Amino acid sequence: VSKDSRRVYWMIGGKVIDSFSVRFGACKTPTREGQFTVYWKSRDHHSTIYDSDMPSAMFFDGGQAVHYSSDFAARGYDGASHGCVNVRDYDGIKWLFDQVKEGDQVVVYR
Figure 1 (cartoon, rainbow, N blue to C red):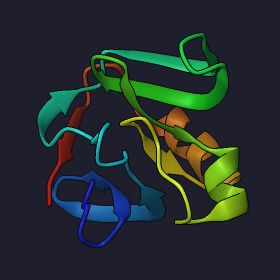
Figure 2: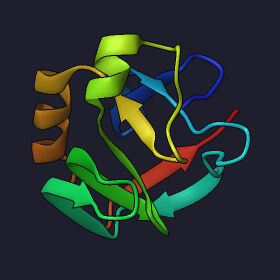
Figure 3: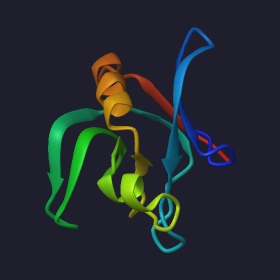
């Protein structure tokens, strides 16, 4: 996940298979950088903290996840997450969710 290019890349063996536009957390709720693993997947997740749907959520650090965001799809970069990596391509994130396995590596970098 590249913050500079605002893309999430699905890679296998160092080769980019696909990528999607993403947005990140706000200044007060930043998306953490580092190397993580997907520890839980939830296809139809709903955040009780933020009362928000998080379809195709792939959790990698605490409550932070890569997931579809209807807000990102509607407003683009005129908004931010609470730390998650938001994807606006609904079909793309559904496809990615089916590729990713728990234990897969996630790297978030500048």
